[in-house]
Image 1: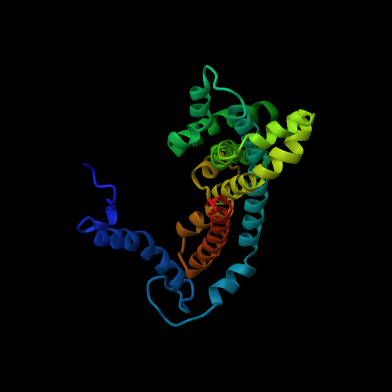
Image 2: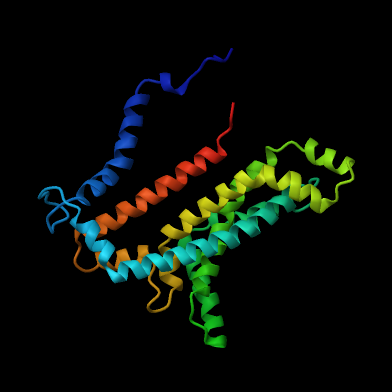
Length: 267
């Protein structure tokens, strides 16, 4: 008979492997954060504590421009991706099972399964044809590319929220002669709102941190903060890159913490 009190934490060596995994994952990040406060020019030799590199990054016009561009793209892409993901989640969960439902799930989540480099090359070719036909070279391509990549990240928490919602309240609203729009506005949407916010935050973080797709799709002078940092690392590497990375890390941690608090099950 199987042991119902089985716990993986009791397996010999579990604690050692867990500690080793955390060290491998987080020690490089902690090292980066520590050296962001290095007073010296070297990224490997500690010369004292200083906020010099944070101040330098803050005063760098190229950093400001790349940061603003990243925020514009991330906010736009996450807003569009969340809207599309919400409609897709409603269309695939608020109806009886239908033929082709699994195929639709696969297509929506396709960017998660395909290597990002493949998606980037496909978008490069697709937008290259449009650029030749229209002559337009603006940020719209980056916004659309990030949107396409972020849709499944927004879709997953929204769909999970919908699947966990009780249909009885929506049924009761229909029994009280509420129209479909009234039911959605006053019952479904308020209950779904935490999932929508969680999906939007996750899409925002994914867009803000993206490098591969951005590197392939962007035109000249359209560096985002991650691609700017990549370019700087190909030249002279200074703790300024560490300072920028620390700022991005702090923003990501705040958003992911909020995402966890919104999506965790209460009780």
